[in-house]
Image 1 (cartoon, one colour):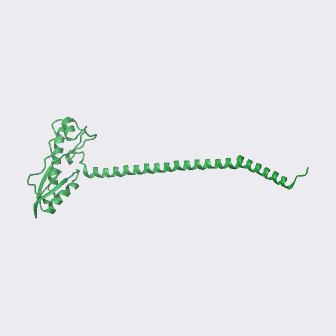
Image 2 (image 1 turned 90 degrees about the vertical axis):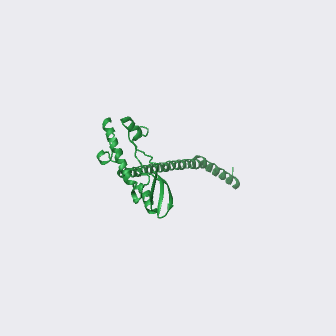
Image 3 (image 1 turned 180 degrees about the vertical axis):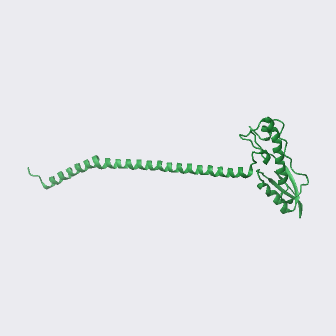
Length: 209
């Protein structure tokens, strides 16, 4: 049986379609799907890798911040905290109760001396006198609780509200006196509420410590 040219063309096209379909469904489409799957998986891995890098950076930033804060605190401790030697104006809380009572009074006197020197900075005068540091107490319990605020605060710390201080002098003297509190040796002093009265050159000022 002789096939016509049209029939041969149709058969050829049919065979081509079958071949293409086979290639499409058995190779191209599965391979394309698999490729996309690997691409998606690779993208997901990259996202996780980026998260790890970001997490590592956050950890490094946190460590750097802690180290910076620790260094700042070491500088404060070195210049703004008293020594643990009573003879040098400090205090050691690790002594026996009787010794602590004696040492606490000496420590209180050292603080009072430091305040007396600080409050006169700038050459001002004190018409009402300077602030007084309270007595620490007569027993270990009252000294620790009332003077060193322990264990109310997690670590012993002495905090005094010295109240309002009145000074007289020139504007420059008063300003020098006020700002000098921020440089008080061995202690951290906070001042606020500076107010002036009077007529220049001699002024009166009040502020809180």
